[in-house]
Length: 344
Image: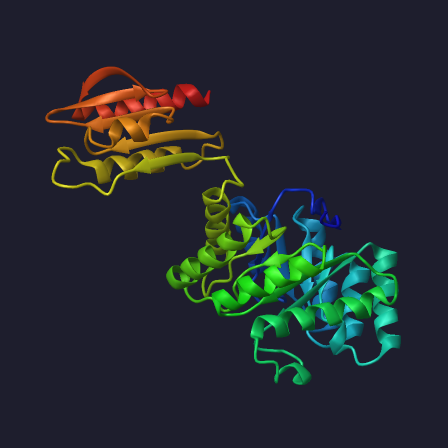
């Protein structure tokens, strides 16, 4: 049983996997931060993280916390006093490694503040910043696990259990194995993702493989797709990963074939137009757009609506049953009408 840990309005460990992202707007540029918070919220982000490097930025973040209903996470590197300040100003969570604090007295001070303010602590370890005594451990996944659990012990020594753990590497296989090892030995919520995964294309693929593998194992309570680019792209990719593994159904799923020489109509154009038409629909609907009658009937069997092309004509399916034969020109308008009526 996964421990339930509160992060703002969310309870990690209750079965709902949250989507996170991190702002890349300068924290002191308030207008840019507000705009980015709005865009992330509109894209479907659940929790947003902000880098905080000094007290002035921490004070500014009071306004950001009031501005959005997304729980905000303060990303702190080495100054435990700044972590305490961020807890005091109202951050839902601070990302800080107690191993960086330097003394047990300082750990106690941080824990005291977080207990008083109801702030969760995220322990975040990654392959590029392991403690020196772990660099000799040849198994990188094992080293990540050991590092994370050492940090947990520092907090639990002070009876603090509002903890989220992340163990990340830029290597997909290492990240997957590290999180499997962690899940086998602890029951705290895991924040999963591939660190420094790359640009939108490479990073999305790396993240989909790593995050998807863990989610299919039932591992992961919150996810971030780390990309070199617009944070909104991270949210879009994360939602698609959750949909692909069956953890989100608030969308129109379009099944379409890659086509071959048997296809007699503009299937690609049809898919593009139906995808655009349905992009804002939040209802679980499945649409099959198939090029011919070879695979079409089978793929359309469990679809709400589907078409399978033929010579000059196409078969229209509703709930797996052929209801009529239509012309190619009728495919798009008929699908739009049926989907629109179903969504009402």
